[in-house]
Image 1 (tube, rainbow, N blue to C red):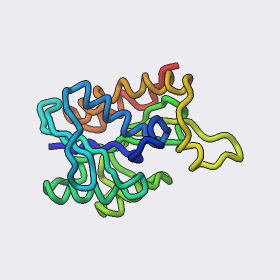
Image 2: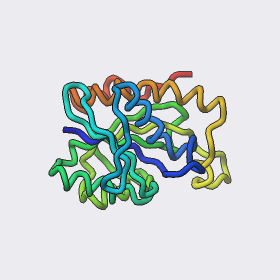
Image 3: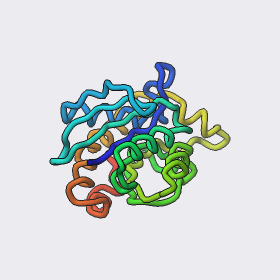
Length: 190
């Protein structure tokens, strides 16, 4: 069993913002495999289904980005899952727009949602799919950048990365993070 968690903020005011690329990606993944994310459990919206021959939980924490670990830990504890059975999808403001980076483990990289998950799981050994949302312009506040809505041009650039999320998750489940890293890391459509 795998938990695929998209990081984002709940509420209409945060829809289509850079920080919500995890939620957007999860919605796309759910639609592609016929899973409805409509149950409220573990401080999250959850959908259950099958993907690549494995049971999966698609999770959108409703705790806001900075407390994503509360929901993640609750689910992982409840199902008695190892950190390696968690795949987290989120925005990365250090990566060029549309660029993809998959990691099997590692630091939080300055992302408060990942910091919260590492803290609550007491482990950094979970897979991450990082989708680049671009670096803020000089003298631009990072919080303002990640909470800004996408422009039409950014939507075009990022939609090609989001379109690959089902393939990335399937590759991780079937063949492991290293195979997915070899296949997808650095990809970007322009």
